[in-house]
Image: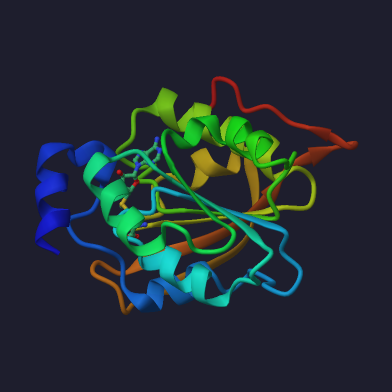
Length: 197
Ligand SMILES: C[S@@+](CC[C@H](N)C(=O)[O-])C[C@H]1O[C@@H](n2cnc3c(N)ncnc32)[C@H](O)[C@@H]1O
């Protein structure tokens, strides 16, 4: 908790929250994952590992789980908890490079991507790069799930994806919205949201 607050104070725009998410939010963030069928799951912005613990406990041993965290201190905390766990690959890096990380693990697409990234406070160009790469990374079949404290970025997200589900999770501080999204397709072609506002 204190660790989180300290990291937030040093980089409020990229951390985007003063405390870790609740286990109720973690349950909603992972509710759409079919753990029996998933070959590859990706997490962006794992922080201290609230969602990571949920996925690591439920995933099959042979499911690849790629966890990407940019912050030095949070990455260390994740390593202490998950290093060496079967199928879990921890990456100290930028979610905007997700396609490279998938390729390195032998995948073209992820079945599920869950994100803790604060799209409301990240610079717009950073969000654009991450969301464009996410479109490629989930392909036609994959599901992209994110949470937001407000729906201010809903229209922005809709430039990239079709929203399939929105759930309000009250038991989180502050309460949050969970959004499940899939790729927007036009006649079998992926659409681009270059210049989205
Ligand atoms: C709101 S916190 C969420 C942490 C955790 N998922 C939770 O819900 O408690 C956002 C996290 O995203 C990370 N982050 C921000 N930008 C990132 C990026 N481009 N690539 C990877 N991680 C990033 C931050 O370091 C932080 O850990």
